[in-house]
Structure formats: C-alpha cells, structure tokens
Length: 397
Image 1 (cartoon, rainbow, N blue to C red):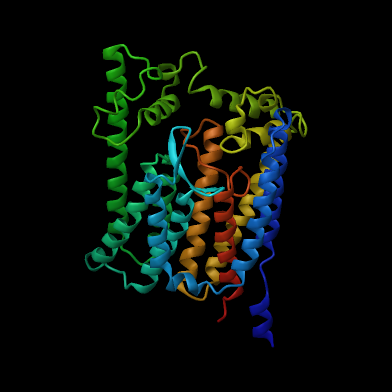
Image 2 (cartoon, rainbow, N blue to C red):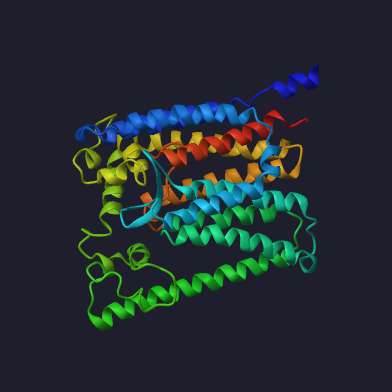
C-alpha cells in the first residue's frame, strides 16, 4: 500500500549528516590530544555510539508522546537545574553546571533546552493565538516558562546556553499567527536590553580606570557593586571582544585563546597542514581544555584548511535544511514547531561557536553539535534529531 510505504520511509539525509559530523568530531578530538596522550576521543566514540543508538530508538517512538508529557519533562528539567545547588552539584572551572550521580556526570541545562522546546511548542499548538490583545495571557505564560530555565542556566553561570533559548522560542512565536506589533515590541525590548548591557560594560570600564584596577587581577570587585547580573569574567569577555587592548593589551590573558585560534585558522590556509599536523593544539598554544570543545573548529581549520571548514559547514547546512524541510512535512503544528526549534538551536550553536573562533562573536563557551567533546550535549543532539526523524516517519498518521 502506497501510504504504508511512505509511512515506513526514513529520511536518510539526517543519519548520513550525523555520521559525517560524528566522524569529524572524533578524529579532530584524537588529533587535538595526540601529543598529550589524551583519551577523550575514546569517550567520545562511546558517547557517539550511545547517542546514535538513542537516535534510532527515539525515531521509532511517536513524537506525540512529547506533546502529552511536555509539562512533566519541563518540571523534571527544572528540578535537575535546581539540584545543582545541592551536594550533587559539581564545581568545575568556576562554574556549577554538572550533576554527579555515582560515576555519571551530566549537564541538566541540555535537558532544559529540549524540555523548554517541547513545552513552548505544546502551548502554541494548543492555543488560539492571533491578535496581540487577545494573546497576552498565552504570551506571558510562554515568557515566564522560558525565562525560568534561562535564568537558572545563566546563574550557573552558563551564558552561552542561556543565550540559545530566546532565539529558539522567538522562532516558534514567529511561526504562529501573531501580529507584527508583537515582534516590534520584542525588537524594542531587545534593543533596550542591549543598551543596558552596553551601559554596564561602559560603566565597568570607567570603574577600572578610576580605581586603576587590572580587570583580570581584581575580577569580582565590580560585580559586587553592580545591580546588573553579569559576572566580571563575562564583562571581561565582552570587553575583550569590543576593546581587547583594555582587558588584555599583551594578548597573554583572556585574549590568548582567540589569538591562538585565529593563528590556527590562518595557518590552515586553503588545504590545511594535514591530519595530526596542526601545531597550535599539538604544542599547547591552544590549550587542551578548549581545543576539543569550544575551539575544536580551530583545530579542524588548521589541519584541513578552508576546504575542511567548508565541508563541515556543508554537512551542517544539509542537516539544518533537511530539518526545516521536515517541518514543512509535519502532519501537525506541534511537529512543525519542534522541527523548527531544533533547526534554530543548531544554527545558534553553530553560528556562535564558529563566530567566536573567528573573533566575530564574544567567547561564551558553546559547543558545536555532534562535533565538540562532551556526552550531555551529544546525547541531546542525537535525541532531538531522533524526534525530527520521528516527525518525518509519522508524517501521515
């Protein structure tokens, strides 16, 4: 039967792109740690196998399950974020982002991204949204439910993951039949927030100059005086982006990773130095702590050059475009919302991560989907892509 044949069909573009990206990630992690006898690539290989298995399982489950259980999943994710401030929370690199359950460590912020996506998609799918004056109760509900996980993630602090949530939610709202007044209002609020952040950074610089303080040596003094909830190290990162001479005139402090990243990418030229021949990560100029996650694109670009970077972007392009295509095939609005939200989440991670390695974005510490080292985000990536496959698989009934 033709309908049954279409129902059983799988979208092959997704798994092919995923396998390609996972292979790129594992080989690049191996190369980045070759001179340090690192074994992260072995752990990443295990996570990749588990993640792809999860993808295959989730793809066979009807995605309506997440519509029915969206509220429970959201509550579980909020509980996970709150557990960070208990003895189960683990401090690493000055941040409280990991939960430890026995030998297992994971980041609850990754579950919060998926849970927020499901909840907002379920609310929009069940609500009658139209004119702004009739939609305020629903919009306020969405705003509050989205703000809570973003705030808890921001307080860890994890600015990068917190910044990934608003564009995802805004994209879902853009799909709904809201009037243009709403989006003009959001634009006004965004510009106002940007102005407040700009003023805070300017006041921070004036404070440093007035008291003759070194921003790296006296980090933490200004945040105790400011009412704006930014950490001084976050202000330093923004200052290093807009005015690096102020924070790190010698380029040996907060700007070091970016400078080494730009050197690695520049040395890669068109064809790169070759696999396992990159010098910035091998000699430790690009620190091992960031070479396999936040700055993994720099390692890849040095070894494979512009052509290698273009291949990576091509794989991402196919994956995102296919995910958006699945949204157009979804048999209901919930499926379309989830697919679009997933695509936007990938675009945010890709744009911010690669942008910061090129000096086009402030350094926020956000991983590349399927490529950067880390089990929590890799499992989330495979999980969400599995749901997209489920949306395609069950697109008729």
